[in-house]
Amino acid sequence: MAHTGGWGYVDGWQRGGYNKAVKDDTSARAAFLQSIPLFQDMGEQALQRLAEDIQSHVTQPGALIFRQGDAAYTCHIVRRGKVRVFVLGEDGRELSVRILGPGEIIGEMALLDDQPRSASVEALEETETLKLHRNAFMRYVQEHPALALSLLRSLSDRLRLATADAEEMASLTVSERLVRRLRRLAEWSGKPVAGGTRITLPMTQEELATLVGTSRESVNRALVRLRREGKVTLKDGWIVLSDDPD
Image 1 (tube, one colour):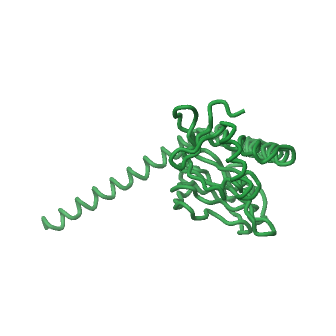
Image 2 (cartoon, rainbow, N blue to C red):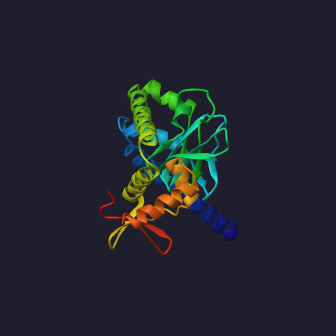
């Protein structure tokens, strides 16, 4: 009897510890969701229920969270890590649309239509996303109509960014586009060092080329030119953007 009671005590302690961990994580998710503009108008109880509905999804570096052309029923909210959004052209070449981090939403168009994924998303490092299904989102929209307006604002912001990127592609040289992209990366994932900011996100010239919308050879030539002009330096394999790259 003592043996059985002992195991019962341990099992009860384990169940209690597990339930507490789940409750703590749900509260942490709710607090995280409240920091995201899309959900800021929702009340505390609604956020708690939303935190219970979403699923955590961990993706290893180099793996795809979803692929262009896949059926789309969910959006993902980046909780930790970094991802690259890219599209594949008819010629098979990749074009990176954006690099996103914690607090950013990916695949949000799936919440509004039945169309396939318009882009692929790759984890650049171990990344945790919170997955929200369209049906659950629609339930919350019915309870909180302001949520739909917030989503439209988010999509509008993305469209403005896409328009700005298209204007850059049409009007700037490869070197100018590269400097702008490097500046964004430095602001987002840079580390101050002597003489500039080191971009801490590991990127090959091929990956930089997909961000700029050109070939690896063109990026290599642009980097040589920018180094000659003193706008960037390479230190131990890392790109350092000078304090005054203009």
